[in-house]
Image (tube, rainbow, N blue to C red; front, side):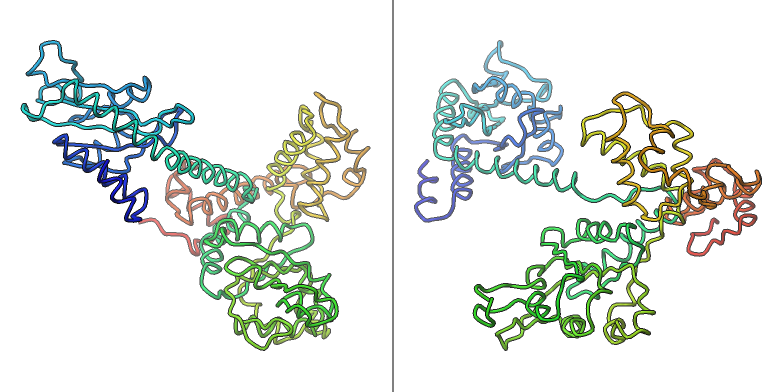
Length: 516
């Protein structure tokens, strides 16, 4: 306790004080092995060793943390002390015929002391002290157990708040991590193109935006294809996820306010500038700035952005000093930007600055293999949201939805599922009659020819089979990162048969790894 108070008096910090006190107590007890373990999770119990002394292996420490059996220490004793909340003594078997035994220590000479550290506020065990030696002259007795109990009580009173606060911070961190994982965007679909997109995001684009002052990234795609989803995916799975993501609809940016909105301003720099504002770039510093509908920005506003994309610096309105920013800029549009340059609505020098690193999203009609998992996902999502369960889609309703060309893409499909659940009866099927009532255009529009092989509807048998085989092989190659051997083995095909399929279906090996 003197060691503890001395360190605290010297402003050494609570962790250093606890370590010094624990080491002094261990020396006083003449330990061979000692552990100080805190409770990280009460149910199921998981401990964490914050300090150890003596010849303890990683296996022994891990066993004490998990409660697994291991030779040389007694994890079972630690577990009993946590459960009972009472200190325990295992006497040296050479001194008492009635000495307690533990399988982990059988066959050796030992004595062990173990005591809980209590939180006096909640009357709960926060940590455990474990002391062990093997000397006959240093064997522990009842007097040692009483002293250790008093010491543990004093430590609990002094450090109970710190232990409790640390546990609460860990719980909060884990809760936030779980929430982040649950809320992280997901790219749904099993088509070869969607699998290729996921692979490229992780192999190319996410590492690209993690660099300091990264190159701007462009996302191209029709309305509703999920450009905002891809931007959020990039942010969530990159090293920038702990910093902000700022979303800007460029169609709302006027020429008069463009510089102020993007770069910020000083109070009083213009009539309505009543406070200092950081602007979009500084607000996203260290994170991601998503500029949606970039094709709607006027040439004058484009000129404002050109400099920051080149130099990674901003100058707030009302200031002359440049400020460095480290922002991953992600731009998105559904417009044909080459045509916009030709029409003069997009500056060529501005387009050149971000055109090289681009992600092109296919419309849903080009990847009908993704429609079934999307229908299942959004049906379940809206059932949970509206607290209404259905029996799902009837077969003919499902086929009609897969055959639809979905001009509004994934956004259109998600909205349709919402309407179906709103109008469906609980516990009933979603059938063609309900689709006709909610979205008659689904049943009256011409079917998407690219979905015919998936449904084997209207396509010759051989064409349908070939389309299915081609999509299946491409999908497996994407799943296994182009590894031909892994892809064919997952399908149960011989090397000769698999390569015959690839040749017959016009699938080149390309970036796939060849088999020996």
